[in-house]
Amino acid sequence: MRRREALATGGGLLAGVSAGCLESLRREDAWRELVVDPPDGVYVPSHADEMLSYGTTTAAGREISIGATRPHSFWTVTDEELSRSDVRSRHALHLMVDVRDGETGTVVPAPVTTTLRRGSDGERVDRRDLWPMLSQRMGVHYGDNVPIEDGGTYTVTVRVGPTSADVNTTETPAGKLAEPTTVGLEFEYEPAAIEGLERRLIDEDEDRGDPAALEPMGCCGDGRDEPAFDGPDAVRIGSGTTGDVVFVAALFGGADRSGRESPVLAVALLTPHNRYPLPFAAVSADVFRENDRIATGSPRETIDPRHGHRYGTRVEPDVLERGDELAISLDTPPQVARHEGYETAFLEGETTLSLAKREA
Image (tube, rainbow, N blue to C red; front, side, top):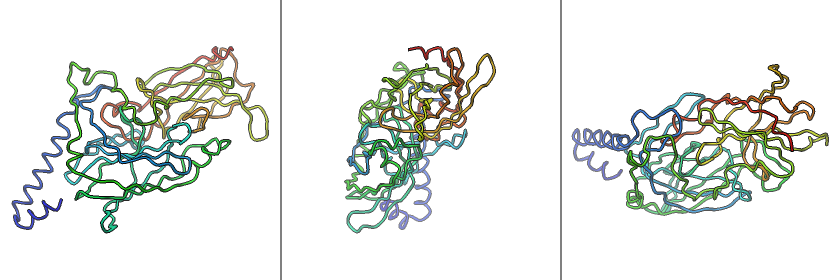
């Protein structure tokens, strides 16, 4: 911050030592509240922070919301490896962007980039690719800890790239998700407002560290995250949970581009408790009959207005019979950064479901 720069100019070596101490204290403060030796799986975190909304806008079929909270540490995921991202003294706030289909509230997987400019002179103060993220209170969003030196008016420009998921283009709003869009919002950054956000510490007698989850904030998606695996064209196969990944499978009637009957095997990956979708994953599915593999496929991440976020692949209509076994594997865990309480979950999983439930 500029105050620290002034101290550094006048204080020489002492200022350098002080800056190092402040950095250390900031990091210790960020981590001292975390659950020690957390369980493998979803658990109640050590605290819950209030969020500040900077505004919502719509563009190209998307609803884009921007907010902020206190800077905090999180875990990034690369393949199956976790890496802890620490809070630094330069971090002023944790910036969050929520991107959803404007018609259905379905989470939209896409690259998201933000550029911050000072309102007084238009000078760029930060530009970054946000991490896809998952938190117990907000669900799927995009975020990162961001440095801002001074309070005042700022403009954030958000570029949302084409969705990385397959899109059902039979509906116009969903078709627009395959195109990039850019929006801008002006907001007032007040350091005191960020520092004044409530942080509720969770005690052990409130299930801190236990296998459970905090309730959603109710700010994002209005609880519309879980896919609609019902309706006249859907036959629900079943569900199973492993590695704290909830697998839900269904068959949808439909036709391919040539008009030939071609049902879709749909698999939803969800968190337990809050039932948030798990995007940016790789899934495989195998059909077994009397212990023999008779079909295999790789469901692709898909979003559409009718059935929400899922992983799907077309299957031959005569391949599946009652009594077959459907084995679903998580080949690559969701490549989303995790807030506390999710960092040890969703790294592996496999479940087997019986197709006996295909009966009407």
